[in-house]
Image (cartoon, rainbow, N blue to C red; front, side):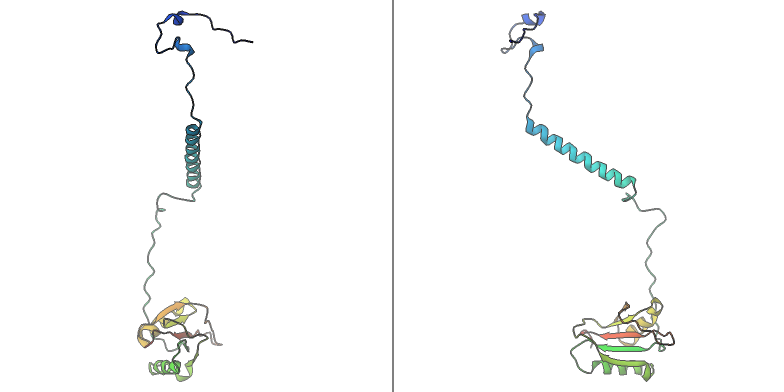
Length: 182
């Protein structure tokens, strides 16, 4: 069945412009499918991204500013105190033989009782920095005093790796001699 012709109206009698007659019957411009799909994909990605960001912002999982009243203050520096009541275990973690005994003698000469300082070899010989380990934060001042005043600036570290508490609830300090000793 042939397509019916539209009724004639006043626009049919216009002079011919570029081969077209009747503005109401102009052809639809060609749509470029690739460009339409590209813009649709870009718009979808932007809207999804904004939705995710808005959701995270609304639920408080991200913030745009620091919470009021919360400022981070640095921990106060602990003053080192030489406390000879702490037993000390000296472990040699280097390849140099007899180093634990030498360091033990230095600690005893600094005021520790001979019976409170023991020396031995560590399980490995590749420890890089001489470190005083303590297992209770309350012992930090004693560890720092031993490290700075007696050992000449060794590191200190809070660790349960060498935790030992004797019957009188006295915690020991553990000196692990590293390759930097000397």
